[in-house]
Length: 480
Image 1: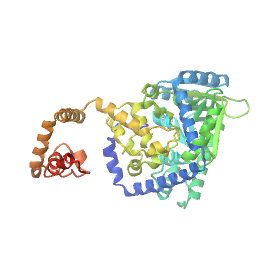
Image 2 (image 1 turned 135 degrees about the horizontal axis):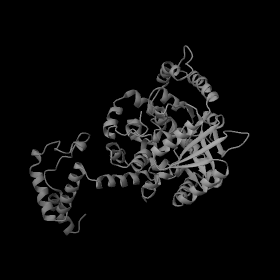
Image 3 (image 1 turned 90 degrees about the horizontal axis):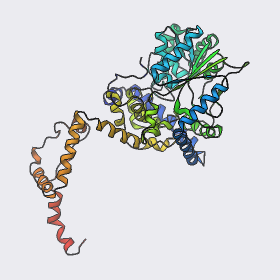
Image 4 (image 1 turned 60 degrees about the vertical axis):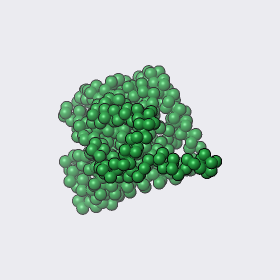
């Protein structure tokens, strides 16, 4: 299982298969509609939501403009608090750093609190290659791992699974990863949660090394912050002797007052809660509490390249709330796996092609995985104009060329010339109307359009000729 899923088919191919899966579509429809309805109610409770949204946008934009300064300040603060900072230019370097840190402890297993950055770089696979087992402890991530599956949602990675499927995964797979599922396990949420708790508790009490991500990093104090709903993350952050956090460089914020904004917007926009159930914060190391060794791996992996793009850089504002996924009609029908990335949905369609480039077939197709309806922009708590970035990335893909784009460019050039010459345009319209019975319903080369749409039928005469016969005299006589 690859962390980046490169080599998957382009989005239209993968989505076509997903759309045919009725169980998947039912699971997604139920889950996304439930989450987005609850979110709308939670957001409506705040009279100043629009101002909080604007504040979050400005904080993120300010930080990104001065990212070099705040990252240096963060490094100084973490180091002063007893931590060690490592800089990773790409996935390979980050994986090497973490692997060597774990090997230096002599341990052969780690527990993980949910971290999309480690999924992005394929850390679990890198550790496995060195004989180190990585155990996911977020419930949804555990389901994905036990099922040898891939996450399909930012907030609820196992959203594509229903309770019956989860029960079967626990029954069949838990024993090979540790404590087995209880006999007679049913699909009731309480029993499933208890089976996961017993399975994970064994790992928490044994593990000496924890690996985490972070939702935010506070530059002025070197504090890292994780939002979660189960408490499993807190076990990973406090019980191990060594903690290694892998975090994208864009997750830094200048100070505590900035964090205050996101403490309000992230819970309401993601889980529809007024306050996050578990907000864990840690600053360096302490003699009597928590891990005795702390390492922070700051991950670039394409982020500075995205930062250089004046339009595309707004994707780096993302706080991973997943609100855009829950309102997207394309995601609801295609599911997360079709995006070929750990970042699915509208945000994945603009983030993955910037982090990975648009050279691969899957990444070149992602900017087109949208109806451009704008619902994603309306719900984004940091006002990322996803439709704007999608169109911007489509231009980038088109500029790279390729057979389809070359033909399109030639057709647009020819159309531009015709439109600049009214007499040629008029002659073409008349010829098209007179030969309309000979026109095929599906012209060759237009399958991408005609497979899902009917071409409009040409009229018996061009509009300009009809106007000349029926309305031109009215204008001359001063009529309507």
